[in-house]
Image (cartoon, rainbow, N blue to C red; front, side, top):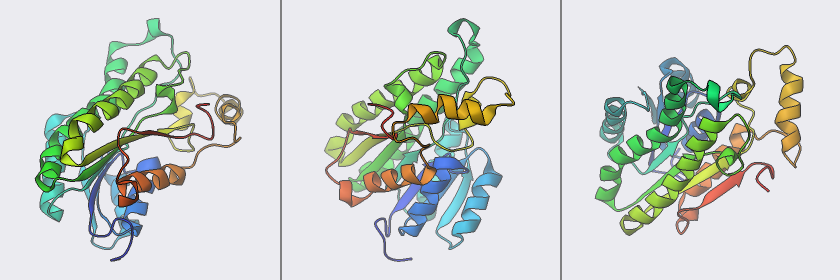
Length: 256
């Protein structure tokens, strides 16, 4: 495909094996981009590439909390497609409701690592390629939980709040290089990750999901991965060329 909002551009999407990342990778390919799908689950990401299947998509197995792995991702992407125009940080992990005194340090470190440190690492290594061409767009998937806290989601809220402020700080830092940095706050989304916010394996998972998540959304339904992908596409495209440092809520009104 030669036409589209992202024609001729190259994008890296982390967490591209499922959910919002997979929806974003598919939409980007439909809009003409070369897409590098990064995920620790290489097999899942490869299945998405199989759907795209036009020679403009590739998979790089990546642990977004490991600097060597992230560096390998960026160098492979730049070599395969001669430059990087767009970075989308979709990789993330949830937290089931847990009191702070029961939170293990290893669990805290993992949530902060995947949800926040990963942004630092990917941006650190992609920026030299974007600065070379004096352009770029970075979109970080944060969460409405980064601005509307919930009890028992202590580490998750902290990680997403940090992602939001890191987005704003980077937007100011990189503006002289014509590199835009924005974030999206999804509300409760219908992805494989949603059930993992629930404590334990309840037999009434669907009832619990409705009570806790759907009922918290004024529009009365869960956000779909494609809703997030559409927002990412807008922020990545030249239609948003004068937008940076913004946090877009795609949450059905949850953040009101």
